[in-house]
Length: 338
Image 1 (cartoon, one colour):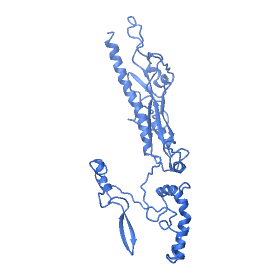
Image 2 (tube, rainbow, N blue to C red; image 1 turned 135 degrees about the vertical axis):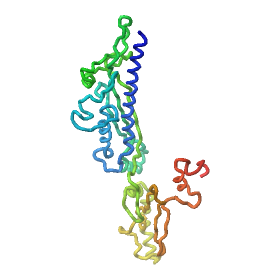
Image 3 (cartoon, rainbow, N blue to C red; image 1 turned 45 degrees about the vertical axis):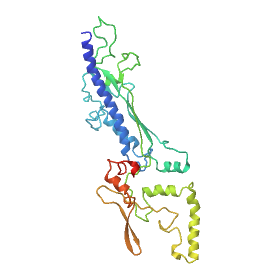
Image 4 (tube, helix red, strand yellow; image 1 turned 60 degrees about the vertical axis):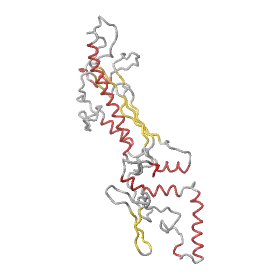
């Protein structure tokens, strides 16, 4: 009796504690992965990127009842975050964010990840970097509704558990009025604080959320803006030295009657003919569609070209990689052979 009854009761209690630990882990881990699918290219709205606070806010609503199985976002008393206690079904212990020392999911963002101390790189990050290192934390508190502080007190003076709570007093009220003491023996007070759940992830700070699709001679689009920022940057010596020299070179060729006057470089010269502006052509390779090609008019007829190394007429590594994706590296059994 002295051994079997306490062991049996503790087994039930520890089973509940294990499930509560998993609940806390789920809240922190699911939140951190939610940040990988946000629209980092969208214009920020008072935050480092659009919707940063909304993500953790929605997750806190989802996990008001400590688990994600039953979600309801109604406002008021009946909502998931209301005062009703119908989500507390456990017999042995109850977890609650209202316990002192508990904390619902909180996330922070550090944007200085990846800084190199190079002005050209830093200006790019400042302009387009919306993500960074995201850290999320959560901690859940549990109260005991089964174990007595002492079992067979006439035979033992050792405390076996923190104070038992009475469900009739209200689980939320018990949690709010709970006391936690950092006791080495783990029996002082009436709140068991589970370990901190901490997760972090580095997002792609320059991510594009839409397929880049730029036709030849087009000077717009998110990818074009990124290339233009680097191409025209003041710390790019090649650009600053080339600007005037390119105009002078073409003008001298016109004066020497090697080029037609209409080919002079002016502010109205379209991309592709103006070396002072980047010329980009890219077409996304979408699932189920043929390899992307560009049609270029040459000598009065149209010619088709692949706009990537899809076929290089040698080993076709990109094509092989796409066709063997998930099986090999770059389509080869051993990367050294590619």
